[in-house]
Length: 188
Image (cartoon, rainbow, N blue to C red; front, side, top):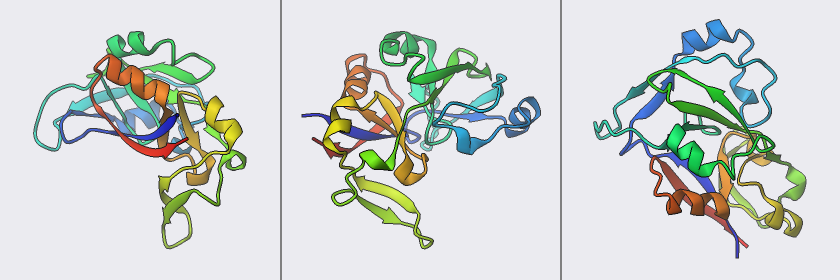
């Protein structure tokens, strides 16, 4: 039985990584946040970063966190442990400057299309304009359940959230890597 999880940053217990918006836009004039979660259509230039205290005021650095909801900020140590899953055909790996200079920006490039989602059995909450706010139960068609990449985004929610398969979740727990929250949304 395989499981799929939605990933979010544990900002209650670990510091949050911020990218300097001004520095980001000065270095990458064509930066487009909506492009994250697919291969970037612009050249990445390492932006300045900072870590700020967690929601509970803690100053513990995470092994892995997120900047937006469909990317990862991964420490070098964690990246080494996850290398078998974070291959160039699955993610783009970029440098950072500042507080997170010893971390890497990981952009997952696999997006599962609507054709692999079983829309009849998938449930979600919606915004007033009809766009998906949150997928509460994801059901993939049989062919996609065995072939889901370790990290991916979905067309159904516009690629705004990051998901992982059970292999990625197990690697995080086996290596005792902190900083992420996993919400199970599918079981096949």
